[in-house]
Image (cartoon, rainbow, N blue to C red; front, side, top):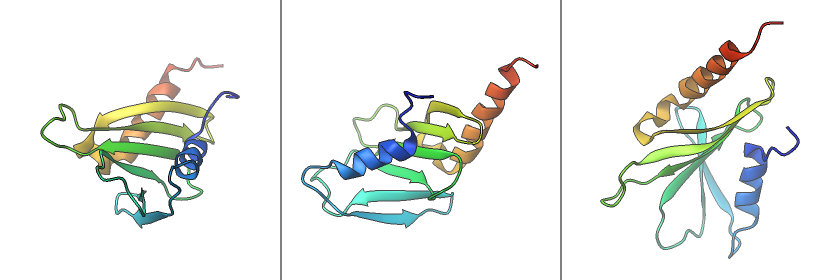
Length: 119
């Protein structure tokens, strides 16, 4: 996958090229992801960002829309890369299912494997 922008690369791009530059804060969540945010956030925040615990497989970078009165479908979406399987995809699911993210991406991987032709 030579053209792949992995979740790790996308995370690096997101956190390295912010204007004005900012340090980031991190919080490990009980459902296995790390929430991160700029220490000098903009006045209005529209999404919450999550990534995998460093060094884990799959790599994941999610943005979850913060519900408000104008949001029709508060969803989480982002990049997933199973390094060991050389499988990458984009996922979108309802925000209230965030704690089930791992089950969701595993189900996608299993569906993909079921479609692959046997040797």
